[in-house]
Image (cartoon, rainbow, N blue to C red):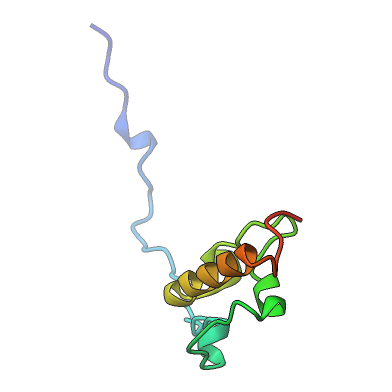
Length: 92
């Protein structure tokens, strides 16, 4: 039967706790529509909707566009309406 390995090899010798860095919390960035107090996203405003679309015509995610959930849904709905009425293209 083989001998058990010594366990002291991997234990830390000092019992001091590691120093913690001071964390500063930053205010979360607000959605562009929340900042401007927009209640309705207009499908005819193609310049605003163009900022929420990639060069290939895909809708940007919430994480990349910075929109809140409600305004992201409203923007997607407005974008789809604008595409249907040929105000914006489906692809680039």
